[in-house]
Structures are given as structure tokens and as C-alpha cells.
Length: 473
Ligand SMILES: Cc1cc2nc3c(=O)[nH]c(=O)nc-3n(C[C@H](O)[C@H](O)[C@H](O)COP(=O)(O)OP(=O)(O)OC[C@H]3O[C@@H](n4cnc5c(N)ncnc54)[C@H](O)[C@@H]3O)c2cc1C
Image (cartoon, rainbow, N blue to C red; front, side):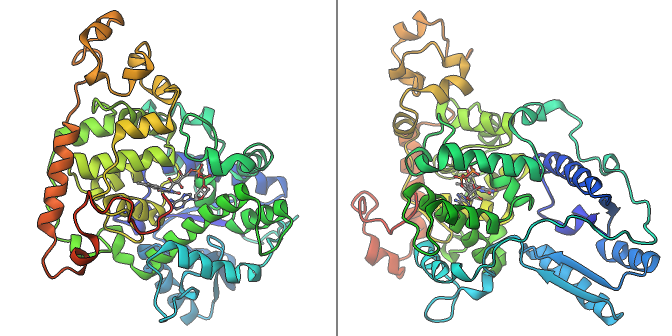
């Protein structure tokens, strides 16, 4: 009997965000439809999970309960308790690996510790990837239980937003297994070979868009591995650079789960303890401008508007907006992580915490804090024709390429020619880029103590240029 138990309060403080709830509604609907096609159905219950399961066992006489493991701290605690309680009552309980390729606790460095750096972690994973079993086909039929409770209709979970902000989602996404497989096939047919070069271009559709499908278990990383290996025709030595780079990103997903499992506090605390006393700024007005895509820095605003309208943002732009928030605005990475968690359809506690701590310089294999992205140069480099900016910041579309990513530097004559008034049609920058960069570096310098071994290794920020630790970004 396939069962979904809705108990968002048990995931607190990281209960599912609004965009994920939209996805969940459609994903559950799709799952129910495909189960009905084989004369089964999805039973939906409301939590608490422990009580819902116990009632269900009593009604149906079930003797065993199975689920796929989740690695988030709150669900680990809950599931461990449920497992123990059910076993005490003689019920067979088993959890399975479904969300990752390798169990996070099985990969260890030479000292038996969890990894904090991606490249050696992924090398260690690659040595064992050949042991990952091939995915099994879906069952063709499911035996009917004699007594099945009615359950609650999906609509009763009230997952869909009451405001109309999710309108743009449906044209971009098809939640559910069918949507996941279609997108994956398209990616393998059309994009994977160019992935290595295209994955950094927010103006092109060069990435897979599989993150929400992977998060919701509509496609498993095991399926991704099997098909990606298949393209290359090799089982352990992947030569094709597109497929290899793509699989490496799946490796980052594994790494995120590895880090979260080993360091569960990193959902709310920096992995690097040195950052605990960091002086983050309280800037509610600037935070609001960042959230609404009204900072006056076009590439940042483009990303934040893409996120709002589609529930997704390109990875390169996630890095740019995160650097801008944490460094130019000096606002805590946790504020950014919370906003992303609420608005991304692929919101994932492991990947989101890793991504934000990477950007803020305080996490595993993180970009050093002093590496502050220049959003103007980033836009020039990764959106060379300014197509991405024109799409998401249409009020600047008439500006020539030389100024659209930096309208605040445009000569008044150019602004007048296109009828653009800064402060009226598009905001002035909420912060001066050069001054805020210097302030961020000064805050970072205050954090460092003379006893910090980093001092010896990393000299002054500007001199450290070109000597960064290896990193995927
Ligand atoms: C600040 C910040 C926050 C992020 N928050 C999330 C999040 O909540 N959920 C999420 O899935 N990813 C997150 N990422 C990682 C990455 O941006 C997304 O996985 C990616 O943009 C999803 O698009 P895609 O499926 O087209 O990716 P593709 O480029 O096609 O990559 C394939 C898959 O690899 C995985 N992946 C790729 N990059 C990463 C990464 N850096 N870390 C972990 N997994 C990765 C994803 O599952 C993705 O679907 C974040 C990155 C940053 C910088």
C-alpha cells in the first residue's frame, strides 16, 4: 500500500517552502495517477507520522513498513524514533537507499573522517560507483490490501499558494515521474554533450533542470548514473566531457548530503567555526530589495526575478546573488538560504546549506570569503549578448550592451535617449560596489586572529589572487 504522510511540522525549522509545496501538490497528483493506471492508488494521510502509521497498521493489519531514507537532521530523528517504536510492537521496519548513490557514512578520508573538500570526496566515490546497483523497473501491479482507509484528498493538504505568484511555474515544469523522464531524455539527446561549456551560461538552456525531480524522488540518482554511464559506453572511466561534468555535478549533490549528514548543524551554523562571531549586518530594506529583484544591480535583479517567476535560478546567478547578499550587502547567508528555501522548486536542505555556505566562505570547500564576485564583470562574461538581462529586466532592454549591466554608470545622454530615469523606472544601486567590497574585506580582516593559521597561508586578499584552493566554481 503506497502511503504519503503529510507532517510538515516534523521538518521544522526547515519545513517545506511555498514553491516546494506547489511542486509537491502536483507530484503527489501525478504519482496517484500513475498508481491508478496499475489499479492501485496513493493513500494520503495527515501526521503526526507516528500516529498515522500506527492507526494504519491497526486498520489494515500490515506487518511491515518500508521507506526511503532522508538525511535531514529533523527527519533522521523522527524516523529513528518511529523505527524503534514500530519494531517494539513486532512490526518489520526497513529503510532503503533511494535518494543518493552512496550512503553518506560510507565515504571516508584516509583518517576515517568525513570529507570537507569535494575533489577527494568525489575521487573516493568514483572508486565505488561501480558497486551501485542498476535501478529496478517500476512494479507492473501492486497487490490490493483488504482494508484500506479512505485517506484525505490532496486538496485538503492546502499546498497550492493562495496568491497567484506561482503562475509562471506550470509553463516551465511538469512535476512527476513522467515529467522527470521526459526532461532527462531531452537533456541526454540535446544538451549533455555541450554541458561542460554551456552550464555556466544563464542565457542558454544548457543545464538539465533535473534538481527538483531529483529532490522529490521522481528520478533517482541511480537512474542518472546508469544512463550517463550508458552514453559513454564505459562503466568506470567516463571519457565524454559533457557527461563527465554532468556526473560530477551529481557528485556535488552527493557531497551536499555527505556534509549535511556528518555536520547536521550546518543548516543553521557555519561549518567553519571561525565564522561564528562574524558581524553580519541587519539591513531589512536592502534584504527586501534583494528579494524583490530591485537592488539596482541588473544581474542580481535578473536572477532574483527569475527565481520569483519560475521557482528556479541558474547556478552561476545563484552564486552571484549569494555573493552580493553576503558580501556587498553584508547580510547573513542564513537570510539568503531561508529565502531560497521558500522560493526554489528545487529547495533542498543539503544542497542549499552547502551552496550558501560555499558562497559566504564559511562552509565545506567554500570560496574564500575574500573572493567577492564583481557582478558587472560576471554579467559581461556569462551573459555576453545580455539576453538574460533583457529577458528579466525588461525596463533596461533598450540600453546598449555597454550599459545595460551597469546603468548607473551610463552617461546621462544615453539614459535620456532610451527614456530611462534611474530612481523612477529602475532603482539606483542599493549599495556602492567598490565601497561595500572594501567594507566586507575589512569585516573579514577583523575576524581573523593573529593565531589563525590561515594568516600564514593566505596573505592579503589581493595578493592571494590566483592561489585559491581548487574549487568547482
Ligand atoms: C546559493 C546556492 C543555493 C543552492 N541551493 C540549491 C538547492 O536548494 N537545491 C539544489 O538542488 N541545488 C542548489 N544549489 C546548487 C545548484 O545551483 C542547483 O543544483 C542547480 O542550479 C539546479 O539546476 P539543474 O538541475 O539544471 O542543474 P544541473 O547543472 O543540470 O546539474 C545536475 C544536478 O546536479 C546537482 N547539482 C548541481 N550543482 C550542484 C551543487 N552546487 N550542489 C549540489 N547539487 C548540485 C543537482 O541535483 C542538479 O539537478 C544551490 C547553489 C547555490 C550557489
